[in-house]
Image (tube, rainbow, N blue to C red; front, side, top):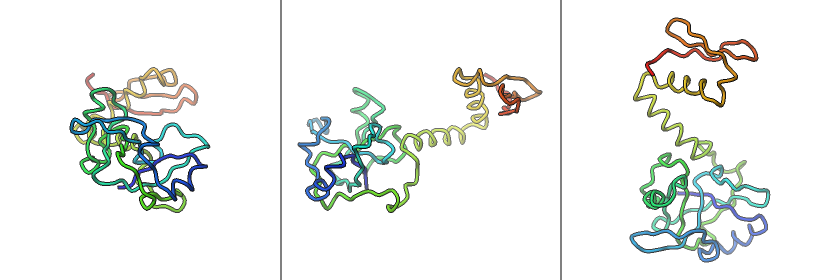
Length: 192
């Protein structure tokens, strides 16, 4: 499994030559089998790192099998702790904000320079998008009315409701753009 770790640009040569020491880069302590272990965080996708600046770049790392865990960073407290699983047990797309918790030093051969223009293509935009898409596909498979319910919820939400007028037309609800007058969505009526 590969992950992405973000480093300062000026540290890139040193990291590629010397590796990443857990002690110097530790960002959190987790409990694994009742033992507290310090670790540093990497990401399954470069877009998952939220604190981007022009001073940092990602490097690709090969995560060690028995020294890496995955947790859902969208959770906190006890729920976060309960989400921690060995990376071999993690199912891609099952956490909204997965973070790799690496509990060992990484040697230079485990680290590669990352170039999005030359490296293998990434198969999804971000872990969060993959997670949301999975939930939508599952809900759509489980219910014939899911898409209409989701569209209705979106077009009537306070974020966009003032952009559309709503008209009923037989078995459908039309959402009409207030700017252009065009029909933006035709949603089948459902029991609410």
